[in-house]
Image (cartoon, rainbow, N blue to C red; front, top):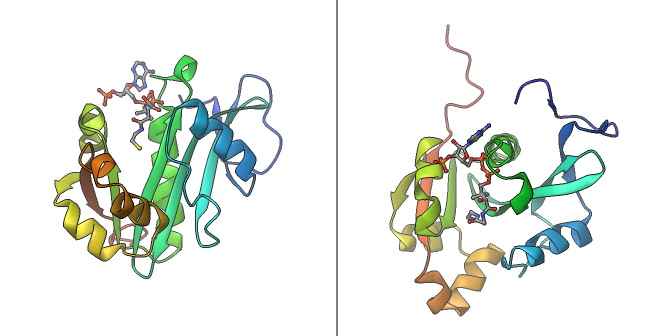
Length: 170
Ligand SMILES: CC(C)(COP(=O)(O)OP(=O)(O)OC[C@H]1O[C@@H](n2cnc3c(N)ncnc32)[C@H](O)[C@@H]1OP(=O)(O)O)[C@@H](O)C(=O)NCCC(=O)NCCS
């Protein structure tokens, strides 16, 4: 993966993967709709979306909904033809950094059981959905699940302590 990934504001070269924070909500929506993912609330002003570009093509996305000292990571999606190359891992690392920069000490997310292993491998542990719904009340994805309990019933909730991110051990 190293060598073809850059976190940069410049235009990606062909064959290079770049992850960039984006206000291009049309691109975010198009990616999520292609994956049949929830788009409710993506325009929430406090949210931050990161897009993975492969050359000029958007190939993945992740969203961060921050609230005081926590953040809900949502809408992680990678286009099928680009999967299993570590792009979701890079998007999650970028989301973690974006959330930490916005003051988050804990990351939360909802995900279907099929991706449990992926999130556990990057440090997340399963928690009760109520904890996430209560802590992140007001975040658009929480509003969506509160209005759609049958969709929530298909998801697991996860948490990760990131309070030590950025600390320099001496
Ligand atoms: C879940 C999802 C985002 C993963 O995207 P991805 O870019 O394929 O993820 P990664 O490549 O970072 O990791 C996926 C797997 O590929 C493996 N992998 C990473 N790089 C690899 C490589 N170079 N070669 C082979 N395997 C690799 C990872 O170890 C990981 O394995 P695991 O699932 O057993 O943990 C993608 O499948 C997707 O969009 N699914 C639909 C939406 C969804 O479920 N989103 C999550 C909840 S919001």
